[in-house]
Length: 513
Ligand code: NAD
Image (tube, rainbow, N blue to C red; front, top):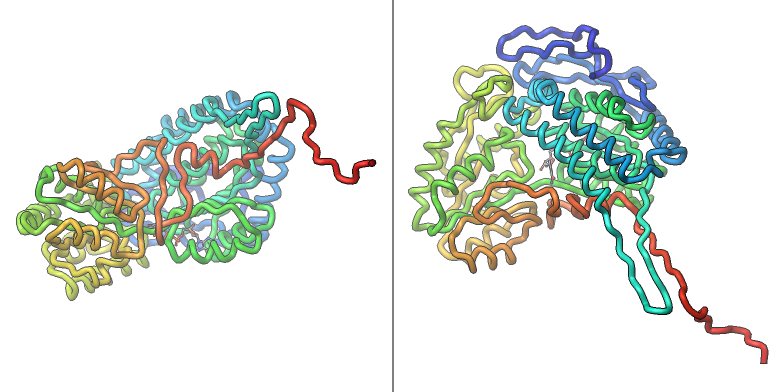
């Protein structure tokens, strides 16, 4: 349910290239204290269909006043309960119902998400399943949660008392909106917090689905609040709100730096999942076919708009020419198409501003490397934000396309001669999110993993993540880790309670003689 499904869309797009999903709302609103509302000042912003670049809907542009209302509702819900004081088993039941509903509505969710973001429909379906899994995972984790106890026999027991913190501010990007929202919502809610979510302004459509899902699953009023809007307005107000002690942010490194500074006066808890320029290192002894398939998927899935994309491929010189040849041929075969078509592998980039940015890197790459595949707009896609999977070979490490996050279907391939050189190249950017190592040498793979500056490493594997593991980056890719128990740590206070079991150990000051 998004707002009122019976209202007609503000613009009907009947083009077969971009069929508008049926039952779009008349406009996108905030959801505050269990009601869909417009902005206090009535302002809205345009939301664009990435296949046509036409505005298809207006969304409420939240400002400080709207954020204040949402925080007040979340705070009241937190203090009045029952969510914050509910038994973990009861909260877990609600979270499982949420997961069930996300699964049941997977097709609708994917339809909206694919339409709004330009992501291929099959990949949007996968992201929906992952969103449900995030809720199920934390539903299980909170009932199995054990906390530490420390004993000093005969003297003291000390135990850790975990408590929800209050109102968590959740700020998310546009690349996989619903799934990334679930990543923050699930642990924040599982631990008993209330939340205010500020989704990315490029892609606000699917976030409204949470309201209906949460209501139906039995989440109490005011625990979940949603404020749409521009980052510098709604996001900024959330970051600066004195009664929001936690900010979980996923987005660009430069935005993370600004949020870090803006949160400093309030000493807020911060979790920062930021940008990446992750290397895939292919040694000569690797399974070449598996490495090619994985590195193709690793940079062209999700339209290349993926934080952990392996967007730099480092290849050992003895297999370099063969790898580049295979890779370029396969990249040319990747199927570009309209996002709603099941056979599409790369759809439309999210927004014309982002399209211009990625295109500027494609043009720059032609001066910095050797173009071996793609290189522009695909034939037959004259409108919208379509870019061919683009491959540059012989890219020096000083090139901007080697150093900077492009966040589109563009990859740089660079040769290396020795393991030392591969490591130097892998570590030679400001980012440190993920690394993918392809080799059948056991010792080398572990030693390389130890030395590479990346928060996450995959050995002979694509980005396949176990939800129990920490997720996060080093250097400019992030601060702190979420995932599994680390999310529970982020969204709770760990109070230490000390109990005396024996004589009271009091050094006595002012003793009577
Ligand atoms: P962005 O930084 O432009 O925006 C992210 C969110 O922050 C949006 O909701 C935006 O409205 C908000 N925002 C912007 N300015 C703000 C401000 N001054 N105060 C508060 N909020 C503000 O990022 P994006 O372009 O939406 O997303 C792409 C980026 O996200 C890429 O760099 C990508 O690597 C990164 N990302 C990282 C991860 C990860 O887990 N490390 C995952 C997905 C995406």
